[in-house]
Length: 212
Ligand SMILES: [Zn+2]
Image (cartoon, rainbow, N blue to C red; front, side, top):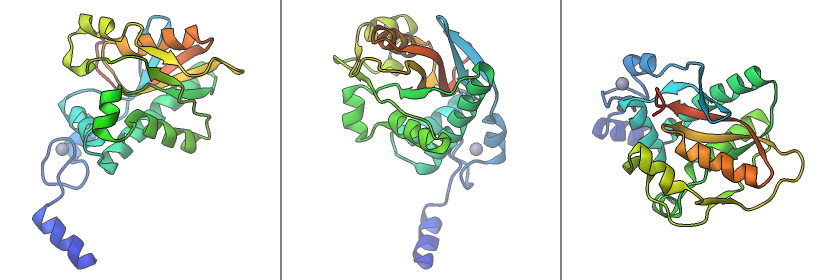
């Protein structure tokens, strides 16, 4: 087995997940660029806590995790998400259940997995938190990443619903991989509040600053 894995590394040498240079996981330049920060932004009334500034290298890691299921890329995003979560807990003094942002039905079919649900699930296990996977898309939506900022809001307007109204307690943190315009988080907040929940904060691994 060791011989086979050696052969595999010879034919497919490991490359940095951020820049593609020959390196295990992350090279030192990418590690430096992708280090964790305490970012705080705002969507409406809801504070958003994030750890890594989105750039092309962070984009490669996100794609490797989301589209190719690379476990090491998942792990990098999980560490960033956990950092954002602890930042939110320290800043707000609450530790509520987490609710993952849902994927569109097309993305779920294409990927065969619920990427944000999976990392939220791992965060919930790590931090001994309740996770409530309760938001669903109720109609077809276009891929947000292909739309300009103004079209993103219309694309998602009224597109989500909750599968369960609030029992007690109703406070939650929303979880997503990336915040860009805030359109997705804003729609999820409206959806949850219609269902009787109170979204205290959102936590994301990555943030595209400044929010557009
Ligand atoms: Zn690199």
